[in-house]
Length: 102
Image (tube, rainbow, N blue to C red; front, top):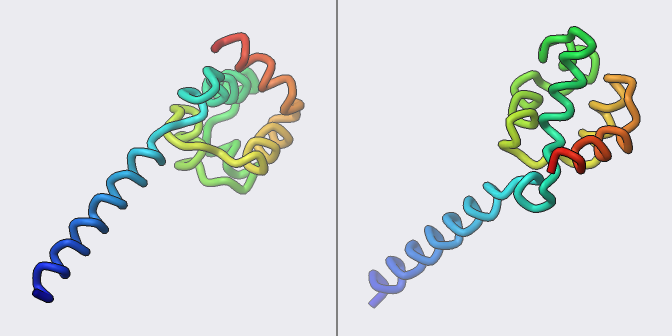
């Protein structure tokens, strides 16, 4: 009897983890239609900066910046503010451009 409950519990945990992974895979672009990552990348490239340059200026890892630019993660508002500040571009301008791309 305990074995059955243990297997059911393990199956439930797997199901919950799978659902969480699926939910986490939804990104800002899918929800809003805004491609903030692409705008950040264009802005960074206009300045002639590499991802490493932006990482050093912002204190955010270049790996995370890459994920943002490819719309593979959901950056927090704080992260977006930090990146826009480092790029010396108001976040409102980045969001306006992203809205136009959506």
